Image (tube, rainbow, N blue to C red; front, side):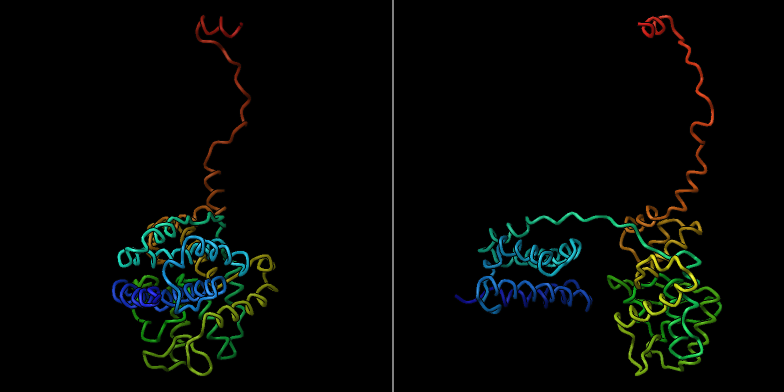
Amino acid sequence: MMSDLAPLLQRFFTDKLDGQMNASVHTKAAYADTFRLLLLYAQQRTGTAPSALRLVDLNADMVGGFLQHLEDERGNSASTRNARRAALRSFFTYASYRAPDAIATISQVLAIPAKRTKTTIVSFLTRAEAEALIAAPDTTTWIGRRDRLLLHLGIQTGLRVSELMSLRVGDIEIGPHSQLRCLGKGRKHRVIPLQKPTVRLLTAWLNELDGIPATPLFPTSTGTALSRAAIAKLLARHIQVASERCASLREKNVTPHTLRHTCAMMLLHAGIDTASIALWLGHATIQTTQSYLHADLELKRRSLDRLPAIGDRPPARYQASDALIAFLTDR
């Protein structure tokens, strides 16, 4: 029997992701990786080549087994499993309107629930830790000056690592109201104002870079933009140096996303409301920003200080205010 899966999956990427959603390169790559893993898993279980698999072969048992395989064999977290499941749901929802003969199989797959995940507390750097990290690069070298600006800009702006990677010289505007423009998650354009220390570093770097507008703001020695892995590697290197000056950094797992969390917490400490922080960071909903409130122990301490203390006064002797109440109390 001819496979109905291959052409349907190809149309999903061309019609749905490209045509209707105008999905980003990152989204399409993540979806493609999910289906590559699923088809290879199905091939191992059925012995059928991916191009010969039918839609009904990807039933609830197969998909459920695949999701469990991600955790048990590949060591993926529950949140990663849920992200893969979301990609599969998007395809099967698309297929439900185009393959009515397989609607029973599709409905069973769509009924597979998401797995509950643990909510982790947001990790961020204190001001002392952030200053130690920014001071870590050796600014007598070209790479050190680049890295210092990247760390400084990441903390001041709260850009995602993908947004830092994609910055170009033309995205920076230096003037009376200095700012940068970025294209973020969900193809949302944001304009972020820059503080004076950031402007000074950027001005010096742009003069040194002397690039055209399309030049990456953070290039490698060969002129290409830094990759996600390269940014993670340079951050780990500078964290190790900064830990010698600020011992508390040794206890933290600092990732590129920690810089973004640090920006959010600094805005929160400055009294900025969560709705404004959500706009600054490019969050889709304000609920995402609420996690910073839960993580901020300092704000909780301030709230506690404003509450009247419990137990400072000795308990007052109880006096019944009514004869009937007094009668019942003595029973």
